[in-house]
Length: 519
Image 1 (cartoon, one colour):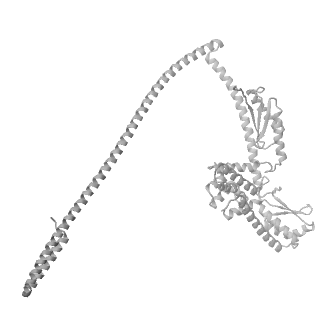
Image 2: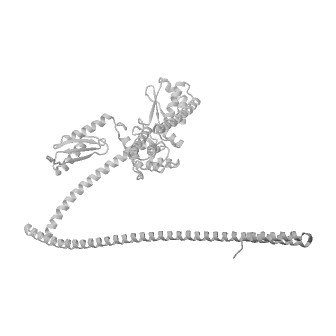
């Protein structure tokens, strides 16, 4: 039995005490009796201490054994619980596997039944094919007997008829394609010519390339020209604008293809006329003032456009270029107002479709940004606009919207499609581009009148800004074959009586309805 450390120390202490007492007895004889009593008392006390230590050791030993037994019971319970859990999991897995096996067996049975059904159907189909082949042979023999022609002779006759019909249809198709190609070529040529007029300098003068400055009197023309023409040369050199001084009373014409330069020249000339002192130094001063004034106007116009549509965070250079578009026109339509319209339309359509409204407005506002620089740089306004947006770190959706709004590239997002539609809506609305509302309404009215004059027409509608006319006919009076002839006759009459850009689509619709009532 192991003796605890406390008991060992107590025994050692008793031994030390005993030795001290013995030493005292040896050195002092007179105290022997007293020492004997002390030794007896120490021995008794030592025995008590030893007994107490043994009792304590037994208690601690029993307590340690109890703790060990409790720990063993706890570990056993944990192991039993874990074994039980694992056994439950194994049982669940076995049930799942069994269910899967049953499901697989059912599917296999179903597949087997389906294969048998398919085999039966195939056999039935083969029998039907054989019967159809026999019937076809009988039909061919009967036809040969009735017509007096063999199958080869009938085939040659039929092919000849089909060949003639195909040739006729081919000729009509070729003619239609040629006409369409000519129309597209004319349209493209007009676009190229108008774009060239806007972007390059030539001796062409139109309402979009000139500005007229009114003079207080014709005497002012001489002062503007100056001695030996020095004043007019100075003004033309500083502004890059050509001054045309002719017989027009009390007016000077400023001609230039770059609208910002023309505006600077107009403001400078008006300031010089008001000031009255016209000489090269004053001209230089007024031109500089006009340039600063126009730059400020451009900045304010760009900021006003962004505030109007609620687009923020644009690069300052893009804002300035937006302001420059205030002085640009496209087919008579102001480019900045057009861009604002497209931005607002894009935002409205994006809201209806649940898309990003701010991004749609941003793409719509910047879709024509290339027109601000296309008279200064090489390339189409689409490519120039995309390059500017890339340069100033615009979103890829905005860049793709700029590139695809004229169909140059495929749109990669719904927002690009929205901008494309909004651009068409803004440009095609009545009054947007050199077409008065009266002309627009008269064309629609004339279209409907032409179609309503045909026999069998119930009603007609001109839609898509006059680009399409839909004709509803009476089913009892017009057959399906008559519809083809009617569509062609309507198209010919429209071509003969009307003038219009592009083409007009004629849709003839025949609808049959049967109504009954359940009583």
